[in-house]
Length: 114
Ligand code: AMP
Image 1 (tube, helix red, strand yellow):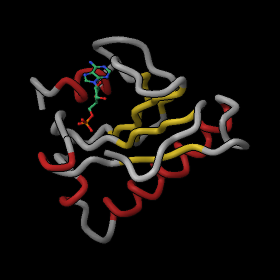
Image 2 (spheres, protein in one colour):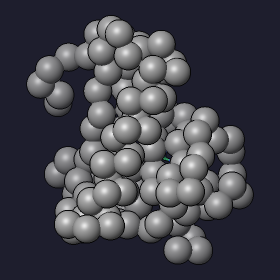
Image 3 (cartoon, protein in one colour):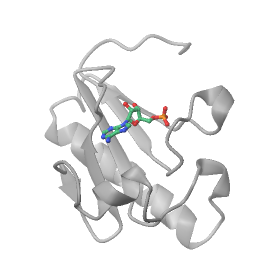
């Protein structure tokens, strides 16, 4: 989508990427909540997690988790532990309507989240 901020980032129009492949990009969160806070985003515009269907989109979601593992490892947080979060919908705090997986690490993470 032309005016979607994460589509613009995925096209390489804004900011710098920490990871890119054919299906996804990853970049540092603008307002980081942990020393490692990376967003992993499909290049394809999907609004939210609830729109993921079995099939290609499910493969894409699985691929994003593998990419999260790789970035966690590259950032040196794999050993201590890290968290992958998707906020789906307003009550969960979703504020950007392009599917994104938060990778958080580099500190102790409280549970349950707020
Ligand atoms: P959510 O609240 O789950 O939808 O997460 C949206 C995240 O996107 C927030 O953590 C924001 O800080 C982050 N964000 C919004 N705009 C940008 C941007 N232009 N570049 C990087 N991160 C962004």
